[in-house]
Length: 410
Image (cartoon, rainbow, N blue to C red; front, side, top):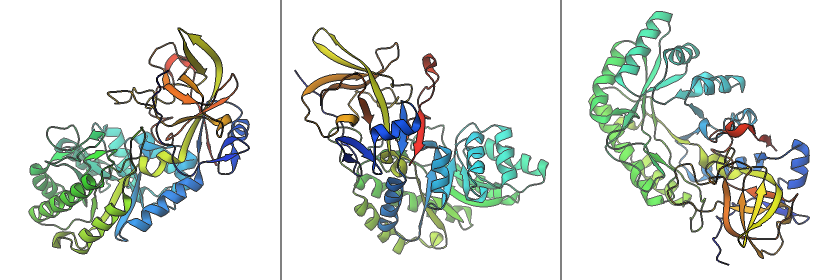
């Protein structure tokens, strides 16, 4: 029978007693600790290793921000608090999560179109930096600051004329709902500074999920050049430049990991020869999935094994309501298999071609198609990797009333 390959399993996972193990604990033990499946498991060890690897590769001048939309679980935020330099949020709900995790609001920046007045007021009151996405948003922020007697901290999110080539989601170049068109930035910045707001600089985010080092290097050079040109036109130094991120992780068969060393070496050269307007500027990268994506695994249990017209289905208690991206319904044009394995038979020989599906009443609920795996029976545990980002909070957990998965940071 024809098979379809599954994506590459990230480094850092191991086999213990024939089972998948995370941080020295078998999958069955983790499920027992949580009391149920489905379950997201996040590894402190893998989070620490990823950040250490980034710090070693990047120039010391480059700060590291965590975009918490990738994984805002409270335990993850508390773990990340001492490891990164800043946090990027996209709602007042995420602001509340950072406060609950004990994160200093002065380390937080708030991006995203369509910020409501109550969200702007909450951010200004807390001392969060607003990455304003339009002149209208900047004017509302200035008005709110005057009304409540608090000087807003304002940066401008820039919509550049270039994009991150090969990125999964392009967020710069051409007409976009994100950011202020580059040619309109200087006038708006002068307005913000003239009104007495605390000027915090620029945010230039061009795309996400790129695996090409060359594309990221080219974009970072473009970002630095554009920021220097804008600073010259504004006539004021940039306190900070958020250079965005875009670092991708391998999800699918054939994907190769990003050459982090090449990106770091190129950025080191850029930092050593910065344009004059940026010499005193604080520079940072904004990363989400690259920090947390490969540190998580989703565990669900086989509840039925069935045959239909010669095809074997492993029906699990999980599905797209927790793993929308793995199902192929989160921006993927052609569905390909994520890294998926039988966790309870992790070291067994793969000799069974199966479709792994979820428990929802829709044919869209698929976790693996025609995958070659060890034979699994009712009660076995299925693992979906690369589940540390855009899993629990980017999936429709309320769909059909099955509810959210459990989550553990170990």
